[in-house]
Length: 177
Figure 1 (spheres, one colour):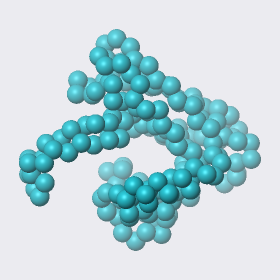
Figure 2: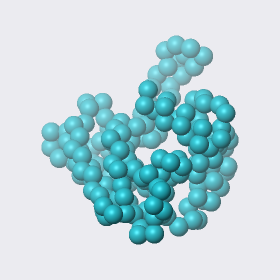
Figure 3: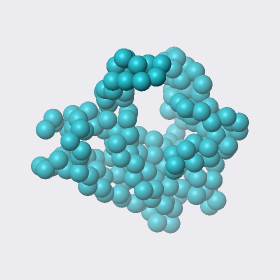
């Protein structure tokens, strides 16, 4: 439910009258042609050509017993607008997840998925006054999680406008169990 509500809020803030799945936003602009790699690539390049408005540092390490230690450090510039309502989020994702479709129009098809969210942290409230905030999480990996395909992502978002000030990812870098 929380992700549906988030999607509706982002669509409303971006002026989109329709909410559907899969719906992709890039830089607060709905990107209906996201499946076209060239269109998506141009939009990402356009966003990345602008200076980041927050600083994010990510780290992760594995430990015995199927534990993953993840750390994200969020730092905001001193010139942040006072009205901003900022939060940071840490995400653990898995690439190359395979699913066998047993029903519906894709019955019998094998699908391979990238960037499947396996963990979404509680948001961390951020402010210039508070300085750098660090979020550390220790996660017990599920038996069906492929450690060698896990990665981290984190972002800082202004809840008032929906804008993402910075987003970064750390690709899969854990050894297989």
